[in-house]
Length: 166
Ligand SMILES: CC(C)(COP(=O)(O)OP(=O)(O)OC[C@H]1O[C@@H](n2cnc3c(N)ncnc32)[C@H](O)[C@@H]1OP(=O)(O)O)[C@@H](O)C(=O)NCCC(=O)NCCS
Image (tube, rainbow, N blue to C red; front, top):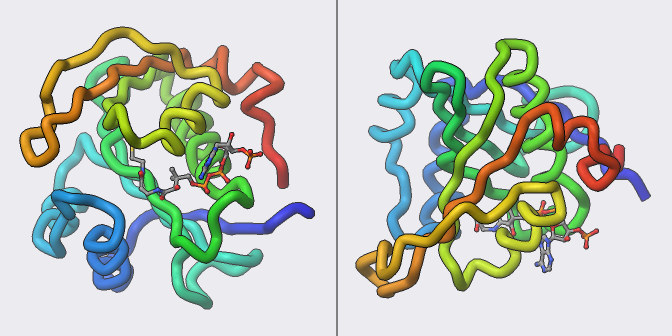
């Protein structure tokens, strides 16, 4: 069954929730200070997702953060609350980012993912991101490799496997 979400830009009032989610999901979490800095950074965009059609009336269920550097985007953060996973929220956030990029003629998205983060790797592959390379031992805390993936914005938007499930 389709799970409806609404998506809007990050507001200052969302930051406490983002900080709490970061602490749960990432070994090197962004702090409130990091998110304040991201809000001030003209290259950086952050979108947050809420359940239902009225953004901001409930706790947020996911978020995506990326930078636009000339004609390329770099995906830095993507997370979905544990209670709302496997309902297409991450795919919808990625599609939201891709539509935003397409409107601004940004052609490609680059990202790095931990090799053992199988869920995220599956998600990106399913959406049509392709592996470009690997940085061996990139993550110091675990010694894990970073997998480097690239997505072509229009190709993913036009592909059936990136279709919205909403
Ligand atoms: C990775 C993450 C963002 C996925 O969020 P999500 O909303 O559950 O993902 P979706 O429901 O959109 O999943 C889309 C597809 O990705 C793949 N996928 C996602 N989670 C998966 C899992 N736990 N196991 C296997 N495949 C998975 C599946 O192909 C899935 O499609 P399906 O449910 O029809 O099989 C979420 O697990 C998360 O927040 N993890 C912690 C933070 C993180 O690792 N972020 C990525 C950093 S690069």
